[in-house]
Length: 338
Length: 194
Image 1: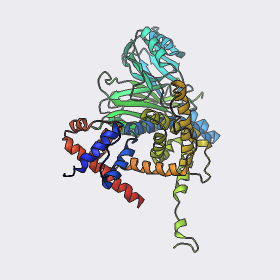
Image 2 (image 1 turned 30 degrees about the vertical axis):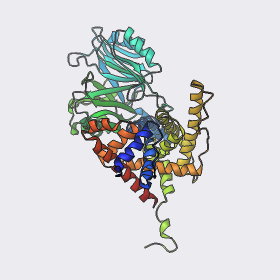
Image 3 (image 1 turned 60 degrees about the vertical axis):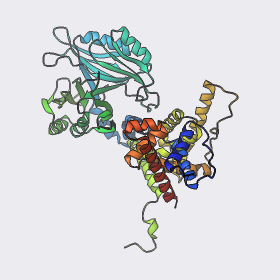
Image 4 (image 1 turned 90 degrees about the vertical axis):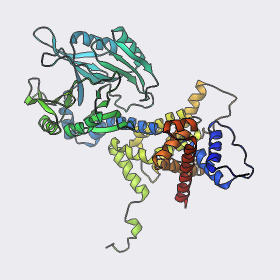
């Protein structure tokens, strides 16, 4: 009887192995086949590539959270003071600045949905809110009614909370519409739900499931930018703001499925816009050690100027640029109580 | 010119010295933990997968091990004990904890205890782990199509028919790719042990 091709013999054994059957005994066990089967048997435990990449990304995210702590430990007292002092107390390197029509109602929504606390409210002469600052968890969001020059610009925020199911339910009571209820099946591995609030903002309400936050806790508030040609945003952020790509997952076609980007002590996330997650050009407030230098750097990287650096009356050295995607970046250095 | 009395093999760092440098770098800057992860992921996963029953648990435990390692890195002291031994000790304990949790959640008194519940990593086991980790790394170096067939067949457990449809190839061609991939791996494993 002619011998069957080795490819068929191996596949028979592999098939049996995968359905947990004993391979059919061979009359005269083929030595060549036996050594291949030994390799095949071990391949059943081969790790998923997606898992390897996702865990790496989680670890990078967590490492970046503890980085500032580690740096502070090795730095001198003077360095520590300098590191902290360029940021306004209560704010991190990146804070979303959300402009909405009905800022007062929006703040109420944040309080009831996410247990936010209002820290600052600066009213305009007409009674609207010129500027407000709201704390959520260990992060913050800045809010304004805006003006003609600054019309409403909702954005997407990835929010880490203790109880995503409860927060999700409260957003619905507050008038949000659901994209989907919290699930454990989100590709990030986190328990993750998504809603759109009555003001047009997207909220990705999550809690880590497969990873443990570092000693300083989670970064509660992270802006999430859905972009066209998202892959081009990463080199822009690196060149403009000295950002660091903490991990990018791309599709086989090269589209960014998810990337975490660090600026200073905070992170933001980006992905390629698709489906209901379309671009939402927004405003972001970033604290840097040297506004003038970063402003110049951002223009060299291709941004256009909104405001040249100036000493703002509230005690920041401040400037503004717009990126090629239409997002505004308010660059600031806290000058302290000088 | 080499100074007198210094044998050439002392001139460069040994593998363990190099690892010590990486550990110290990561202790000073957690962002550098990456290099240690890249170096040891396959070993930790191979060890965990050999002791727990299913893929989801292997992933949960592996994730826990690396997160614990990152969190506890400042307490790790480099005393010539390989970093991997430290990682596998964390892994062995995590596996025991995992088994206890699983037993609490769905007690099955008739089941024999898993071979997992041993917080000690034996030398023979260490050799098997190294072997398997090496195999996992070699899969990453296979030609793209062979690598894809290996992942779809062994990890995702797709049928030959399904893989053929996804790749736009005949079932015979997919079986040939599977054979070539396994032959390649065997040849390289034999090469690495020569």
